[in-house]
Image: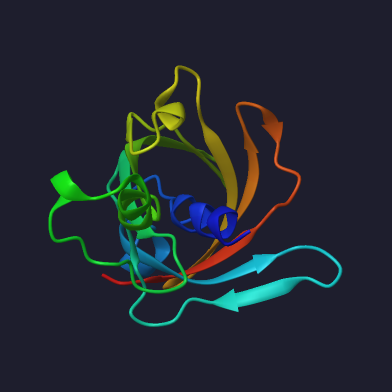
Length: 164
């Protein structure tokens, strides 16, 4: 559950078309951090991401890049990766997520198309994720909608704040 929750965090940060005349607070271009995640259900659950928030999303006029740590606590250190066991490597690298690529906006929907990602499946031909969004000043809410496999059943909503 925590992995699914945090995978969604970074993807949900992305939206903007860079329309001329927009002020910074009217555009999602810039740097964002996920601060809260709401998972639907009976009852819905909301989680606050504590400081320091281990995630950043950078959005330019046409591209996005995001990195995040998907663990509930600090990752263990590793003195020598060449001597680490498979379990030690997984503990350090598995919780890290990275993705980048172009995006498109249509109305209040953003579609992300990764071209570089830690997970090769995210870069497969035709892979995408679509989110609906709402921007209010320096706060952005995004909700998972669909991917190349179809509608997302558990539509998580992520609240993000502008970091820059």
